[in-house]
Length: 218
Image 1 (cartoon, rainbow, N blue to C red):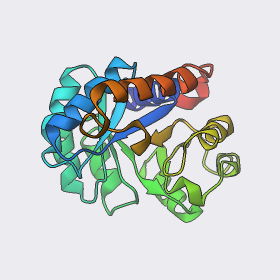
Image 2: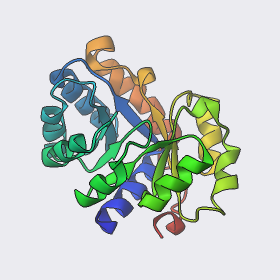
Image 3: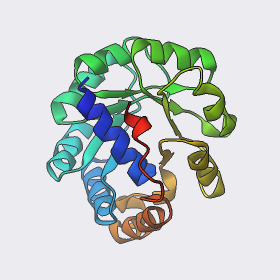
Image 4: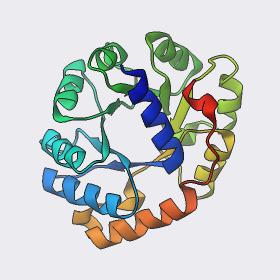
């Protein structure tokens, strides 16, 4: 993995404060939703592999200048497909065998899902610098302060039950960003204009609210 790519993702996610997760039934809806998010000021977002033909949406949105990741990865071969389509990072809700190694080989930023300290340590030992705490509602923001002295330089993106005050609590505790999906909707479910409107509220509330901590990219 390029250190510059990892540093760029960390800076961008930290600045944005939240990571939109787009789960669509068609590539065209994923593209429309991604562009609606971009209109609101979003620059980094995740598309899930549950979208049939997600790679075509990745190509289109990457060409539009967005930093795109592919989530719900279950097998290393899916990582190579994401890389070929222009993704810059990959996400899973757990730690699949070979996930981190293949992502690093394909020069993508790996973000595996973890819940326990054993999983966090295992992912970090394999080379992951950013971990997805999932589901976040089973954990507590305090875990960041507890774990960071044990795994210096590790970053967290809590996802699942991270809306409203809970999201603020995670950011205040030092999370890199938090994941948000259903609350933003998609173009097919609520309309592109509504997606943009909802995303703007998140941008206004959570983006550019924290000073740049140069330690986050060390």
